[in-house]
Structures are given as C-alpha cells and as structure tokens.
Amino acid sequence: FESPLISFRRTATQDTELRGVKIREGDKVTIWYPSANRDEEIFPDADTFDIGRTPNPHVAFGIGEHFCLGVHLARLQLEVIFTELLPRLQNPRLVEAEARIRSFDVTSISQMYIRFDPEPR
Image (cartoon, rainbow, N blue to C red; front, side):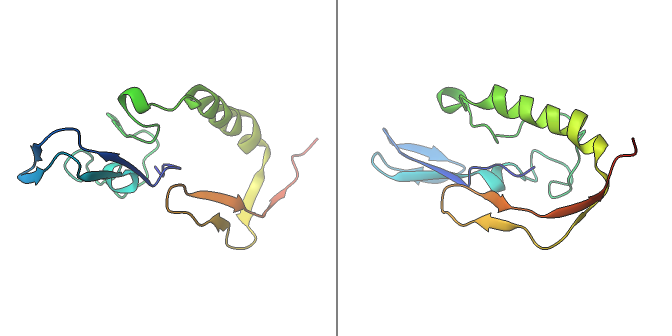
C-alpha cells in the first residue's frame, strides 16, 4: 500500500508525448510511487487499504529493468511477520506515533513502539 520509494527520476532520451504532454529529449521525468499506487484509473477505491486487492498492478518494487533486487527478501520478511510474529502479539497497540525517516527519495519508519499482551503459554 505504501512503497518505500517516493520517487524515481530519469532523463528522456527522445522526444515523446504522454497524455497530451510533450516531453523533449533531455527533460527530467519523475514517477511518484505514492501517486502511481493510488491511481484512480487503475484501482477502484484507490486510497482504501485492501490486503486482497486484485488485480493489484502496483509499482512498489519498481518496474522493468528497475525492478527491486531485494524483492524476494522483502516478501519473505513480510510473510514471516504475518504468519509467525503477528499471531503471537495479542492485543497490539501503538504506544506513540511512529518516527519516520525524512527523505526525498525513501520513506520508512525508524522507530515504532508497541505494547501487546504476552502470548499464553
């Protein structure tokens, strides 16, 4: 739902047109991942978090030759969190607002304190 990348910039290698906007060779072009992953023309209810959203052609891990090399590790980490860790955290609750890394390129949570009830033994 929220990509760790915020933007990706490239330089146009030839003149082209995109949705009626002329882009000249040498112009800088930026993709904004948060916008692309909530494109109302692609996703119904684009701003609603839906874990089962299908189809889900998001660009969170990039596209084409810029596809993330760490995608398999990231997906494995998420699988472990959802299948092993979260089921053990009874009644999780946020203690305070998370601390975010401020950057033009990347978004991330640097600290997030939670409380939870211990799993019964």
